[in-house]
Image (cartoon, rainbow, N blue to C red; front, side):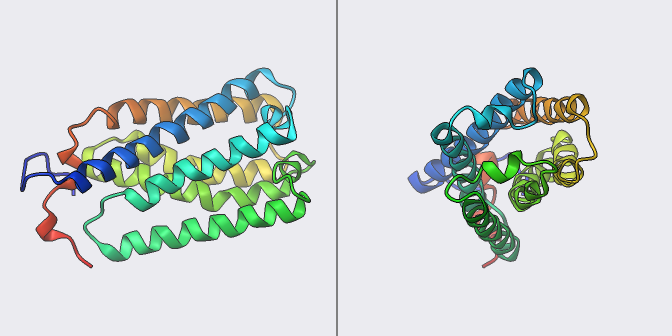
Length: 204
């Protein structure tokens, strides 16, 4: 993909799916950035999640929902890639269920333990985000997408081992958030037809 010319008129479905895809990018970026801002000022990496049980669960579920929009409405020429991405997202949902079970109804509780080994269960979700950003990097030269794709899962893994101190963890998360914001601003204002490309080239 990555073509910037019209190959065929856009249908209503084309427009709606691209908008939903980009809404997913906007909301996932906003949520991660919100967490990063509070983390930078808070006493622990996931401090904002500990504000209350209800708010923490809602924030986490909204993140999964927004990433899900990206996963299911992304436009890819190769169908097998899309199926692979969906499988990763399904794994992330199983991991979310695991967090609910471990946290006895609050999936954020395991993320706040020391050391926070349960943070590894967020890695599949980060791989979904990385897949999306890397795809855009390949198609439209949004090179920050490569950086996001490489850093996020590694960051979660290293943090889960308790290796990073609070300052280092907050700094790296803030950097990831800044890259996501830069990526989002460059992506969401592209013409809608950029995401559709040549539909005759799509593979099942």
